Length: 372
Image 1 (cartoon, rainbow, N blue to C red):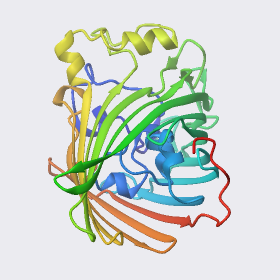
Image 2: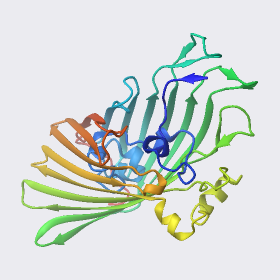
Image 3: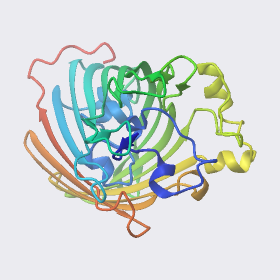
Image 4: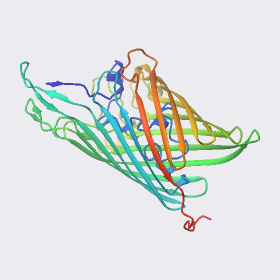
């Protein structure tokens, strides 16, 4: 028996019908880690690149103007109902050529303390579940406007330690996965102002299923397809505005009415996820979440952000407004985000995110570019 809470799947957060909500192992991989995207409604696949691009779109990294940078983000998770859950995200990048960059990142999810008990009068044994993902990324520019990126990821999930119940021996779950991404941006002349249109796509967490006991009890990891666009325009020399829009679709088998998922191969499950819903095309559309956001910059120093996240009532029913602020000074930056759910007393209410960023100017002796 387990006392404590550590749920992260949308159906368990909102009370949505669990027979239609897609659930996966290690859902922490899809939680927004940084405050900039968190303030824009979880938009990030095509927005301007920064150190957190490893999570959103690794193909963007090579378009960062600086040579070296890193970021640390902290999110108290489900703070409305639990006081000891949190997510820490560390990321850093290095451009060793104008058209090539590498990056590493780590996402650590602390699920707080829980108590394992064998019987009702048992005082129980405390345990601290935790999950971890470590990434290595390579990003390359194919032209001045087009870039690609790949990420390799190691995933570790320890939810029960060595606790066993009912004759089943529990163990930590482990997996490896990969991300494949593309990014395109083009400067435009729009209304007499300098503008930029960016498009992005990222298929993340392509990897093996996770088990916490044996091969007969495996769950898919949250393979996800994210498509989006961002439009930025300079209103004048001091004011800049960006609008972003992202679409997300989990590429895992849809839940069946018998409560089980088809035992499919990795690729079979990914491609089959576009046509396996019991409700047909209309239900497939419901599995797409929408993120939209806007970002305003004054003199590239102060930023204000707003966004909205929308999910179908049948697939989790997460609907929330986000707001955020940002500040940049020389090599230093700080971002803050706050989440306001549409539903009162929602578990995600009052979610805060904090990010610190550091970017270092290019050296004077930049390496010669092979694309110039």
